[in-house]
Image (cartoon, rainbow, N blue to C red; front, side, top):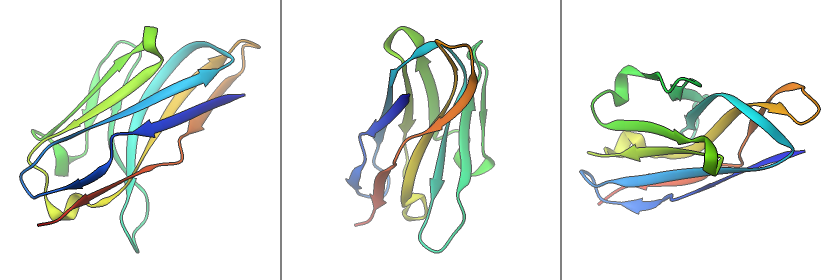
Length: 120
């Protein structure tokens, strides 16, 4: 089994910054693509950013220039630096990791989410 735990969410004023972290544990051999998604109240979950095993990153248009995704395979972690936050960024943020398990299964896992609230 593999578990993902997000941290770093909270309440921040518009224009502020937060850094989200997601740490994996369990029977992990290696990682594939990692990503962050979000789900606002009453809306569907949407992609925020992904980062490949070679550290190539892709971003949704609504976060380009404001958010930065990074990863540290040695720490089994993915991060999301969020700057210039807007009220519309308010959502539960989820991490997802592609994992090759120690049994050599190619799996995808989700964290349980961390709430980000942008409000004055």
